[in-house]
Image (cartoon, rainbow over all chains, first blue to last red):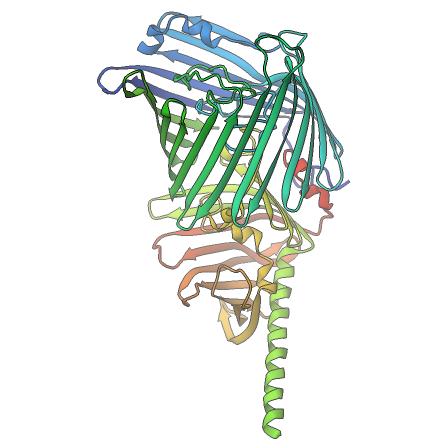
Length: 373
Length: 246
């Protein structure tokens, strides 16, 4: 059968290894840069892939981080705060937990995969990524993430079983079951995808912890501009005092212009907002879930990217919510210094209405070097 | 009457000549593409102060279906571009997400090279979107060539105002191509060399794309291997296969 992945001429090695080593210096300051706190993070990722047969593969991916510096000292229980494990098995190892230095390794992928032309079956810790848009993913019910946490693009895995059946005409149906710590409230859902009129469409339905969930999304274009969206509706299984229906809708559009300019706009509506902003986005994982992708009812995102040359890019993003006029500015400069070496400069500045003034809550400045192998 | 006949004859000969010019382009195009092709290609982006190198494996079937898997550099390894007719998807392995690309992305540089995404997607247009005519005979690297002019058809949405191609008379290889904008200003020049047997066909193994107004800039494509006419089912070019191809 020719539709399988293998074509003659390429030999696949039994074990493949790729990954990176990053070093990131973070500095946090409020208004004045001379009163700051900083931390250093050495970050390694090892991705092993075992090609047992053309149809059976295994993956093991390990993320190791070593934190040190003033900011770590100042944060009480920093080690414990990052040693959170939501999966079925505890695969997080906190091997140094001192006041000024913390080292942790976590296995965030550990899976076996069987795939042929018709089926894809994955068992183990995996990323089930059902999101479509660039910032807020209402359909990403298995591993919702905080996009301000830019230093973890792989995202945590879920301990799950997923089974995908490929249908004709580029359509597929997928079933996934995620084991939650509380065994009575698993997340499990179906996803049906198809392609028509040059659009990708998807529909999902299932259980999300204590709720029923239905949702769907699309990816297509209006003339030259990309046009994507996704939505989810959560309805509590039991009517409790603190339970409520939640509806999330995320829309985005993007467009490129001559001379390598790119603009993207996105919006998120959340019917049941928490209204609590956590400003420590990248060092810790704030409580983000598919029901609460961002703290506010109305959220807007705008980004403009200028590709200065094939090896250097400037990106300016901002997030705005009318709730307390919350504004987050994120300028980023990325430079590919050599074939396998990158340096990024990232600033995140948070602004919000306080009781008597509009003020800068915190600024976080990051310089990150990355060597990929 | 004689004059009209003469005019008609002249007109017909232009049609005939344009048909022949188109046939030559078609032959060259079909020779370089085959029914299907599987290639590994090294792409060098060269700038006055730096160079970068990328290796990809590319599967194509006709003009509508193509699949490009990045093999190197390490950071981009496993990235896939899948094109089906006018739709393009981009698989990014680090986030395990397949992203549908907006049509306007087509005019952007493809992964930092001097090629645009459009160069990958709209190759069909050299036959359907242009009118073709002979200009003269030329010699390129000691090979006899037809010089053929391609002018866009009135309603076609093409990037170029004019394209001039030099095609080998004996072996139907595109050896030298000049791309002009709507004002007739030369923008890019592609030169092909290192002619050798690739997948049992005599073809250039090296293509250099040089932008006219940027000194010291160029992109070089080197074919490391090329296989033609391996049967590839259309389902190979499905989004479901985007994580699987090796």
